[in-house]
Image 1 (tube, one colour):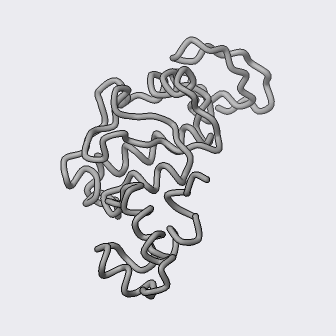
Image 2 (cartoon, rainbow, N blue to C red):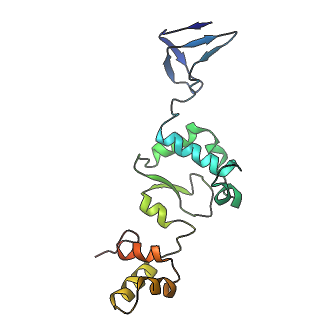
Image 3 (cartoon, rainbow, N blue to C red):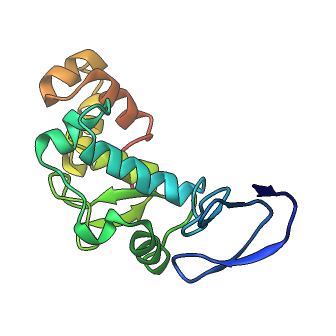
Length: 175
């Protein structure tokens, strides 16, 4: 039996009071949305869910780059609420991304931070470019003796990386 449009105050499993309009009764109570924490659908929840998928689901397209190479999520973060609490206490903002400080390390409070996409992109396996390499690339380009393609070969980096360095989209030059 379904009672529609009832404003009933329910206590969630996490202790939060929530109002639910539709309560299903068939031997036990369930809320229609089955809320446990109220975070589902938020950017923070999607970040957490994405971490779990990449690390734990072998069918996920990015599993090979995460769980497939041994990167895990700490036991504490297998539940959303501890992850949410850590995030909110450690600088989470909607315009930031979760970043593993040691790119070969696990998702855990000790190895994660909130960073801009620029910093996060610079901290990837494919990006082994240091500020010294970026500076050297700019200095060599300024001589006029190298094309971007030649610099890519000389500096052992990709041509798109050379372009990004020279346009200050990555490894921003401090003036």
